[in-house]
Length: 342
Image 1 (cartoon, rainbow, N blue to C red):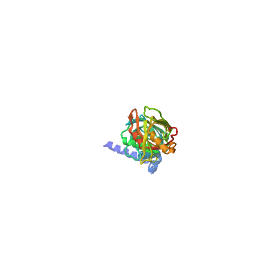
Image 2 (image 1 turned 120 degrees about the horizontal axis):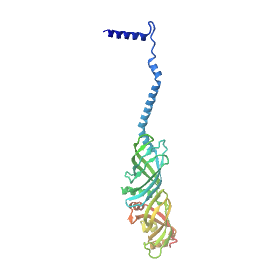
Image 3 (image 1 turned 180 degrees about the horizontal axis):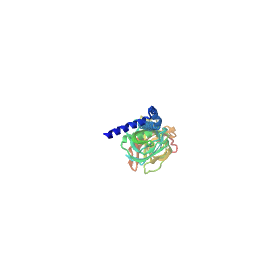
Image 4 (image 1 turned 90 degrees about the vertical axis):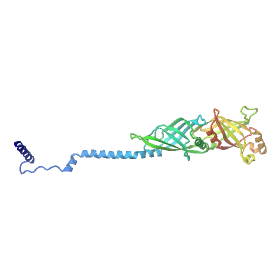
């Protein structure tokens, strides 16, 4: 009992001591919130900065996928080089170089993927190419070198026909890949690019010169020779192999209701490089028929209209249908000077 009283007394003494001498007012406490802010302003500043940065980071992560997709969509590709060699009926070797045009402020890394290639206006891919990883800087070059299998011969023939006949060709590259900008995470994007490049424009400008008659019996049956000059206004290198062309006279020249076939010409080991390509030409033609027309109209000896179209293309004894059909769908008219032959 005495212990309890002593404790109570001690507590009262302590309270009185804290209150100060009798008659003296207790000191005022510093203003609550204001005082707290003055003493701990730096803590609030840190919290504000952290919250602001967290909000900004959240905004960046939310907007990042759309920004990344927009960057891919706005970039462009220019074809600077393409080589197709070793063609077979269902495959070819291809080397391609494209230049990236990217004026955006973002230059992400695009990871490797497979892209399907479509001719403009077609829903069927004509081939698939492996696209290497690249940092999408403006002016960066992409190099592709692969052996490609033709999975859809109809779509591929349509593409090659467009390249042969059209002045410009437009194709679309489509695929799914990943992209990373700086230290941000890798994300998925849809890769869609449109690429327009020069085609062979129907082989416009093709000429045949240095025409001469061959005497005696030739092993290949040829009775006429000359030089064929084939223009290539593109950045493409195309191996054709052995090209056989159909020769016809326009109906108006042959005095007929339709064009008249008069023979064939052959060019061996044909590879078309950018610029003008000249090859020896060997032909088997109906010379008696030609001579009869020239006797009827002597002006034809200096200016004989001739229609040339592809008949077939072979390499190593194998026909290449997609080249035969593409060239067979194209006809070019040339004017022959036969004064050196007759």
